[in-house]
Amino acid sequence: MKTDIQIAQEAEMRDIRVVASQLGLSEDDLTLYGKYKAKIKARKDLKAKMILVTAINPTSAGEGKTTVSIGLADGMKQIGKNVCLALREPSLGPVFGIKGGAAGGGYAQIMPMEDINLHFTGDLHAITAANNLICAIVDNHLYFGNELGLKEIYFKRCMDMNDRSLRDIVIGRNRQGVERESGFDITAASEIMAVLCLSKDIEDLKTRIGNIIIGVNEQGEYVYFRQFNAVGAVASLLKEAIDPNLVQTLEGTPAVVHGGPFANIAHGCNSIRATYTAMSLADYVVTEAGLVQTSAQKSS
Image (cartoon, rainbow, N blue to C red; front, side, top):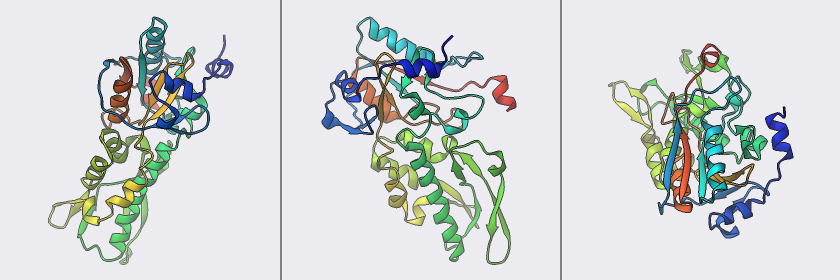
């Protein structure tokens, strides 16, 4: 039996410009990331019927929502339907863990599988950088006098990897020598990931970043990130990440892959901009949502 990797290696990928043409997009509508990946501008001329795949317990081999979604879209394409996928981006943590990649399996995969499962177009790295810039700004604020009177900080750093030793850490001492405890979340479980995927445009994203609760002050009042006057700096790191990505299945079905929040901490589906864009370009959109843990994942 052929492995997923062998099947992917034997597949003949189409130029992403050819795939885009199925959706009525020209090269002028694409920001190319090589021959097989592209960024596209978000749209909101909704016309498609949406098909949601959810609540599937994966088999031991990993066939779950993503595999079913890809297979369903390919099947609809085979019977002549104008269909597009809208899926989440994988997180490097599960890719190198028990769960594995999130690009489907067998003959129901999105391509280029190895790129999508690893760095893709850099979206998760940009989200990680934006999240940690917020932390750096907050720490700098504390160092130079804590004008906002922060007493307790809720916001954490993040990285796109499973590293349990960083979940709870001592990050340093203040001028009085008092240590401060914090920790890292995985990028897919970060608030920046969540708000990016819910944002309708860059201005909406800025508003949501500004509304992030950093912590509470001495009076027990919430302190919001907008009070640090650095929303624009954080948003600038996400100016490309906010645009959806276009790839393809093994059979050349267009797939908009963008955003990857874990469902146990957030809304658990791809970005709203990706879904709206797919629904503006095709007659049918197949998407997925949710996360069901297996017993192996719970014990890992």
